[in-house]
Length: 185
Image 1 (cartoon, helix red, strand yellow):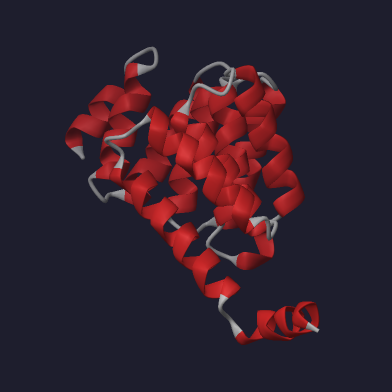
Image 2: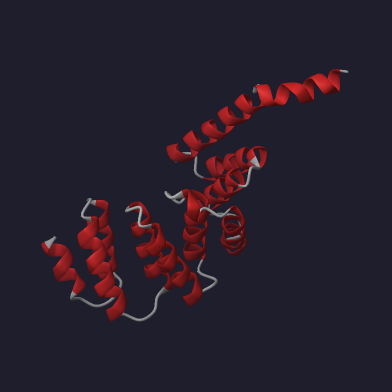
């Protein structure tokens, strides 16, 4: 924590890197306090508000996370990372009442369009938004692209397996049986 506080007194983005390191090390309360100090000392920066919102998501502080992520997008509506993080929030928020498939899709499409569909993490977010919207076939197809772009990302591979398993289970679920019987007649 000492490094965190020393670095906060400095200038520039490096203070945020140390704050993120504190958050990744598990000192979320200390990182939250340090982030707030740093955010209010520096100029408005979409990326920093987005990082702060992502950290709050990790703390399951969804109301404050949404506010921070939305502030990041309001500062710079073309910041792909801020757009993606807001989309991820709406697609995967810990508290289901904050999930919003329409907003997740809108912000995810924007971040992917601005990045020419070349960022695997943004594509993964789009797949999560599709899945939340009930478009499971599309989610699996899109997640395949994320895996293709980042073959070493095991989290994307696991997500793809999850989508594929959900698809195979839904095709063999009792809910689909009446439709199959109707088609046979």
